[in-house]
Amino acid sequence: MSKKLPHFLLFTTILVWGSSFPVMSFLLNIVEPMPLALSRFLIPGVMSLIFLIFSTKTIDKQDIIRFVLAGFIGIFFYNLFLNTGQQTVSAGASSFIVNCNPLFASLIGFYILKQKVKRFFWFGILGCIVGIFIISFETYEKFTFNIGVMYILIAAILTSSYFHIIKPLVNKYGALTSFSFTLFFGTLPMLFWFNDVYSSIIIATPEILFAILWLSIICTLLGYYTWTYSVGFFGANKASFFLFLIPVFSIIIDFIIFYKSPNIFTLIGGLIILSSVTIIMFLNYRETNEHLEK
Image (tube, rainbow, N blue to C red):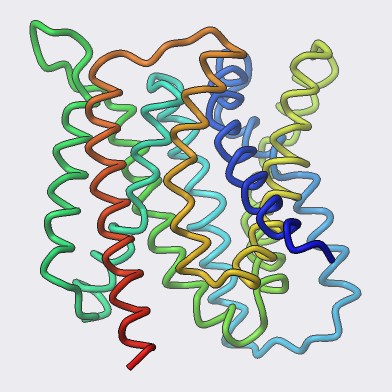
């Protein structure tokens, strides 16, 4: 295997994940939030079921509940709030807010799991709060709160909670099995909107079908599996450090393909969020390496 392949796969994963935000914004002009979520996860959900049927791993009964919880929080409710929020929030702004999830995950660990955090972490949280507040501005004259920002903030907190739920399962069963169970259980409640999906697909244009398949197969199915490979090769800390590129790619793709430019508030607030998350992740990464060297 070429030494460049892991780097290529990691870069490609970040790129296609960055594309998912503008593609979702495009589709949400045509499809309602939950039918869109099912359109995205139906094929990956079926593939995960096939994988689990032929899997030889035995799952403890008590862990099934944890997988169900992970699926509902990390897939179903996350996409419910994200898609609802993106109806009124731009792709770039959405990706910036979701990019706060590493800090939110640490915040949940601190308050609920009583995990220790470093002093510099609180500066990162403050930066994210300030950035999200600025993104919520829509005009120079006044602050107009966009409820969609709140929905996406909830989505970011949900995916941060999902990290804590799934982590012990990944350690026990591996990333591939854990993700497959999560994907299957998260897709199940979406089937309630199957008739809406069917009605939308039979009248969809080729452009809409391509966008749905891009989200489903490229961004979700291949994206999560290449990410799993990247984490296994580089390690979670090093691979996660590149996630800050997702909002950058989102804005570039939104501009090139959909001709949408972010407003000044999204750029300023996003830059503050991006800087806060990146600096905290870098300091944490450096401290972890120094600890391991000792």
